[in-house]
Length: 258
Ligand code: 6GU
Image (cartoon, rainbow, N blue to C red; front, side, top):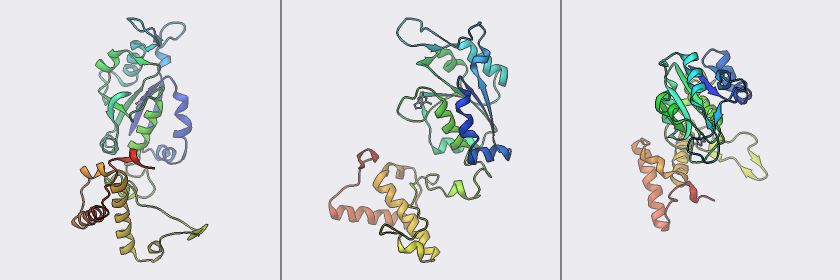
């Protein structure tokens, strides 16, 4: 998978990409991240990449020409791959989108900065727009890193454990079960006995039930898309039944936690 990132801040990508799993993925040739500084395609002597908005008002707008020049110079015209604009106005990124994009051989990412960018980039260069959540960042760089990370993980060989990415409960549409490692007791807080029992069948069942319980308590909205076995369906119904008996409903969503 090749990523071409167009940004005014290429240096912010390097520390994260040269660490741990993503670095190993690059060394193994599984991913390639090419960083392109949009400023190199600015044509005036001050290498201007932003300008005042037509119609007035505050803030600066990223200029259209350097972005087109950068993308067309690197990728050709028309680009042979999706060109994704990172913007809070895009469709909301999730695991399903990450997995779909992980099957592609190449993706271009354009990071907006300042208060905005010329609408013609959106209309005539980008083929997709993605947001990572309902909050506003100062630029698309962190969002691009998040996409690169989430899109790389499902690529075979990126995680050490070949089952790794599929076994993630989020990939299966649920929240993760609780994890523990040594010591078996810390400040009086014990690891659940079942995890020390050596009974792998029971452990697997406990984990699946914990995933269901957590999802039910914190993110019941995820059940709308998850596919459950009959046993899991029955476990969920027993949770609902015990809750009805206590006359208490699960939280609507995770905003009401804590
Ligand atoms: Cl992709 N960019 C910016 N600037 N802010 C965001 C975002 C992206 N996603 C959520 N907030």
